[in-house]
Length: 395
Image 1: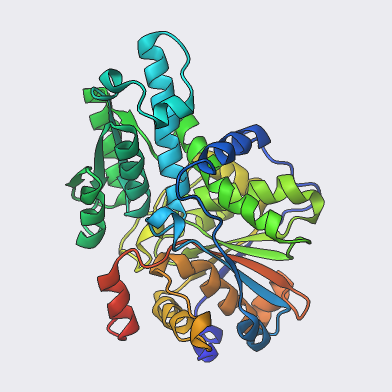
Image 2 (image 1 turned 45 degrees about the vertical axis):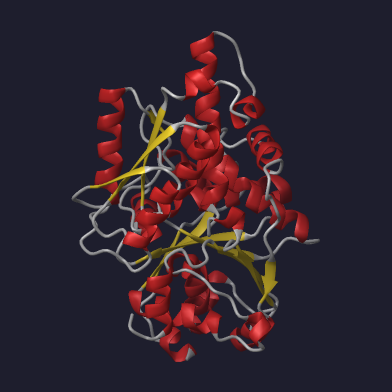
């Protein structure tokens, strides 16, 4: 099976980073502290497992492969539960404080201490599925209205999951980036509050808070490991997950932090192209990738500023390796080692296997029998219909 990966058309761009890799003053320890203190207090909070894939590591000639499995995070199926819901609370904290003329705490917002103010507030976001589900969950918990915009290719199951949480879901023509633009227009016209996981000029605070929420996951990893890994392979998308993890690893491990590699679909390589161009660069999405959560044509500006200073290299993977990776995880032996992963959740693992089995890439990334690699399994089964089709080999 590894022949498929060894012979795949995997793109690679070496970012050429040398010397000290300083973080920009965007994602601070204090921001991560605040998010961790809040999120860890929520009912149902549990650290997700860091699984060891020993047999796979042996097959790839690596020392260790560790997989952070986010499928059970707050019952929402993905790491996004950490970011969107937390950012909803931060947005509401600012808005309610402004309306009543005094500062309120996140705990008061969480406990619905201001129902008369909350009933007139609407939060709005664009999504490929998982972020919108987290925003809808956060809005429902805090007692405010929620509108979620999705593009034509978002599955009905993911739409239904958001509606079940009380959100109004609006499907528009165009891709993910078109939904982001529509939320900006409608929020401005109606006075709604945007809770986006991507940023643009003049809109950075909330996306930073989303990433601070993701930092909870990264800090769980640094506390689980006695020594830093050598490599981490991270999903692309707009860059929020990768930036948050890279920032926490740099803060906690300093110069011992692992080399960061960002993995994207070849159909949506906005971070890959940004690195090649030396600046944040948008790409046109001509065809949607099976990895729905990574089908993003434009980087988040704040995420890109972190990744530009922390990422050793960028990889693109072909569509043909995604479904086999999902099936591989589901067929591990013994049965107790099997993992149910969504199609967007395996991008980092796909990138690792491609790199480890292709001699030129293996050498370029410094992968060998001493390498200890961390991966983020960013989602579980967020659409059972699609997952069943993948397992049956229909996709």
